[in-house]
Image 1 (cartoon, rainbow, N blue to C red):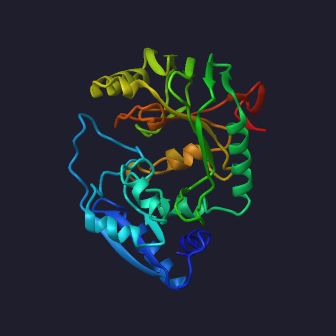
Image 2: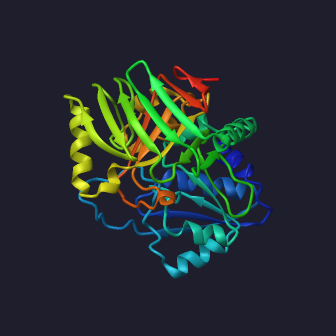
Length: 334
């Protein structure tokens, strides 16, 4: 509860503020209760807005999309959410890519996504004041760059145009109206414009596919042309899983690049995925591990592509260069 109170306090709510605890029937009840107790401890006025988790509509299981379908433009729920200066997002997938987010932020509400993690992980990854300047500096570098190049000893050689890319960073809290952040934080991501990504991305043993919540056991090589994966090479289970999952969507956009970036959180642990059952983790910690290249496929609204098919893949031991200058070398943040 102390960790929840500290994270909420970083959002600078005013005493007596209404705080919407937005959740759904499949949300982690323990986190809802911890958030409510923490708000009461801080002298806030929390209330729960709990919606039914919608029935699945996709042809395959969907995990870790950042696009909750729980609100479904419910007019009364939206009115309550928009009336709250602070929204604690406790939905299963989160509001980051939800269709209602623009309307919610437009009302002036600020949204803290409390990732669907075991509370032990949230407590370990409590945001620290020093996280903000570190992430802001990385965002500034990425926004100023014209090209990103990612290479590795495994064979990765990926070229990404950063011109017209949209870049954002998350340090774990939000204290300005009309903004969103997620806890755990410590990540910078860029959404490239259409026609910006080409090359080869080689996933080695030990890299992570967070849709499957699985450390890779075998090599997978992705050929990317004009933003889209055109070839998946590999003879092991990992390549087969990726091929079958992408094929199931029947949607070319599922093969497209969503965002690229890197982790900056020195407290996030690579081995954490092995310590929790699959339903006990959303994998946000792995996205934030310092020095990983975070590669994502699926929806990219800034390139005009929309799909529920989604992979988040932290790739380790890469070198990331912006306009020829390394910001990560062999998996170590510089």
